[in-house]
Image 1 (cartoon, rainbow, N blue to C red):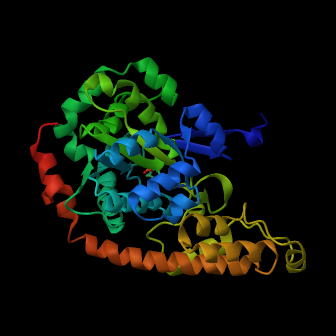
Image 2 (image 1 turned 90 degrees about the vertical axis):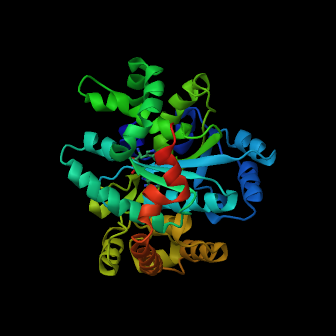
Length: 381
Ligand code: TYM
């Protein structure tokens, strides 16, 4: 394999041009087939463009989860966020999709905010920093439309006391050799990380029902371990549905990175910043000159503006097809494509931020006082 073709995906690092089919083999997951996607939408009672377009492309036991659902057994949802800074567009896709699943399946949702993980990972972050980002990120998550009675959002440093026993039961069953092999830990890895996998696994056992975890594929290594031990603890193996990454603005290699501002658009970027970033950095599939572009057309499959519209920002399938065709035929120029994306991102962010502002009034319901949250703070896990 040449250096250019090599890639790496772990929960803490994504580099190179990701070969998604190869990852399915590496991780031992299954393709999310069209048939299974159709079945999920049928059971949901609504179509969903993110599913239709194959952004979620891999799964574990989604078919079994739907068998159970069709027999009348419920399931619950679990997802999370590591608060190391402002969230970007790629992160928020997971939460909009999870909130759609919650609405359609009337399911409880648990959202873990891993301030512990990020504190351990990034030497420059203090616990005060991660607390501040947790608050900001939780408002963004609420803005994705969760039900305050059926959603519990928690920071690990705050909730650990209540989930410690469950976490210990998990930790007792996972050997160092397993986490070393799965996550590539070395003798330089700090000891917090050795225990941390038990912490991220724990919420998948907050209920005895089967859990469904939506996330990008990078988080799957945790679920692999969960599935090896869940039944021995009296819980079900978790199901998971994995997405591809929204590519970095700067090009299809790697993913948006919170530490490289030019690669990502943050939910906090104002309209001017969005315009400048897309205008300057969005990797283009266009030709070198307008004449050539008109003659030969652009390549939407490598064009990041097109990819972002396809993956999230243009829900209307007739419109996205039209954009694709016009760009490919050279009728639409790269600048015009970028402008479409700029307008879409800015109108999305404007609405998102209005919802985020309103989330300040309901954050207590999600963290402490709503129906599910108050139960979680009372009950033994
Ligand atoms: P974090 O904060 O790195 O990422 C939050 C969620 O966003 C997904 N993601 C992306 N999705 C699409 N495009 C991208 N470019 C992109 N980058 C990241 C991640 O897969 C994740 O779903 N350890 C976790 C926090 C966590 C968690 C969980 C995540 C705890 N429990 C359960 C998912 C499910 C983390 O730091 O995520």
